[in-house]
Length: 304
Image (cartoon, rainbow, N blue to C red; front, top):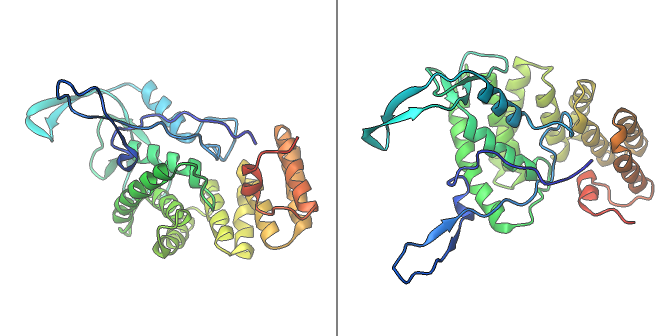
């Protein structure tokens, strides 16, 4: 696995207000203090768990949106009713109800029973880069605090939409991921309860969804349900989700099934030859009974 810095698109200045740092300018003329948003630290987890060499789904969706025709629209500025705003950029639009499969369209404004999910998907991707697995991998305390604060808001918003019995698959999968991330950030036991409930609803709609099986599998495993996690991680591996192999190996380690963990990593090495060095390193750790958590091993620089 190549862990390297990844660029984040569409980071709004208000996204991480808790992380903002005041920068005083030369104030001889009583100029106001200018606040600048700090740069985010590098991602720890690759943002496309299906294929580490591919751009994340959010980035691909933005490219598709940009390539689609734009139907410009003039609307009243909600902040200033006397002004008009020209909407001329396609956003990522999902249905909020009555849809049992992944559906995304591109428009400048969401319609009835639709939602502009662009900023939420952007934010969830940023959190996922540091907290997809437990424990989260933050090197900056203020950055983590900012993520935690914003995630509470986003999760509450998604929970409200997901509370409907006919909530769409797209709403449920995002509410599920937000709850898993909240649990990983130790925001409270309610996030664990919510994540289980959302996973059950999602898999009832589509039991074969690869991403849902991956996330439910590793969240069960990292929460102590290693035995229960096996069929979900197996299904994700069969669906071609790259990270499912590492999650499955980690799960077998937790079950003290070293042979299964090693065999899973050998299979991973065959399917993803570029990951041979990572697989060999993890196998070596298991054989010498070293650090057993896959993500902690990968966090530690390899010894020459």
